Image (cartoon, rainbow, N blue to C red; front, side, top):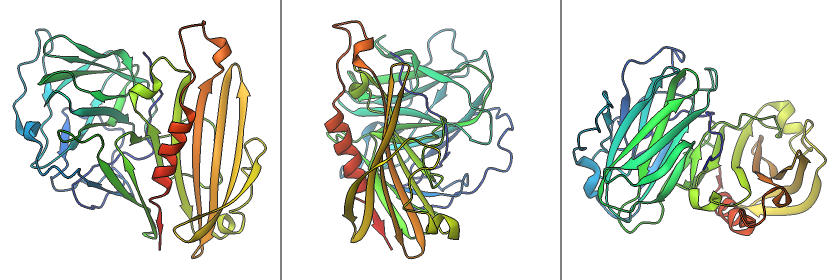
Amino acid sequence: MRFNRLSLLLVLMVSACTFQVDVLDTPTAQRTEAVIVPASSTPTSFFNTDLSATPAPTPTLATTTNTALPAPVGTPGMVPIKFGPNGTYADVLDSILAGKSKMYSVNALKGQVMSVSFHQNDDAEWTYITMRIIGTDGVVLCASDCEFWRGVLPATEDYFVTVTPSTDALDFMMRVAINPPGAATQTFLYENKYRNASLSYTDMFAPTFLSRSQMYTVTPELVLQFIDSQSYANTNLIEAYFLFGSSTDEKAVSTCLEPVASGGPETLLGEVTIDGVTFTKSQGGGVGAGNIYEQTYFRAVHNATCFEITYDVHYGNIGNYEPGTTKEFDQAALIQKFDQTLSTLVLK
């Protein structure tokens, strides 16, 4: 099954504690080998955003230091991914040229939840990146057209992730997260560029870049794509994003509560209070060629900063699918996950 397009707003290198990231000096330089940054390592600079992770309560992840089995025949250059001590995820920075593929391996336990997603460098030309995930025993977790995958692992073994871009993929990042045994999710903490706001999100979301047309007033500094594979399987859900933007620009602050100028008409739904701050809530959207786009906006001015949060959901008209092949996605459950992320917002 083909999942949603992933590209990069934030290519982030992550540690178990907060860390600094900067702009990559040479974003289009071809990498000759992968750079694996485990969660417990010294942070590496990449972009102008801070991110930290709060692992689930289990103190150690037993499989993170296991040595991967040899790669299958015909896959030279396989890259083993090892997590750091107590680590629950790792970010792999790499480049793959058009017409080439690269295989990575990671070891995990039966019943653990694993997710794999891609973040492309927005200074480079976007390309379509897909992967195939197969276990040592031959079980296929996702076919060759997956753009992300998240699910429960069926066996204790090594899993091989084969990544293939349609054109040159320069300086992309692949995040591999494996939750501790028994943990349904793990949580990441994001702090904005002004250090006056933060929020938390689970591994059901992953940082990415929203590549389609603008439908926001403040350029998002954090774009999270919903990547839970089971929620997409056999449904009409195409893609879903949580966007967060903040700006101290005088014009942005003065027009903060106005509707999106380049989007469709908005309907004011009222006001909501988040962390003691009043936000206006509105709804917009549009349709086209059997596609339905829905946005929910939350906007506020606080301490001379404009804040804008957007829920963006794209799904297909259920009437355009062959009867019996596709069901309506659980919109209420999806919005609840968005709301849970929004509820963690802290403003200073």
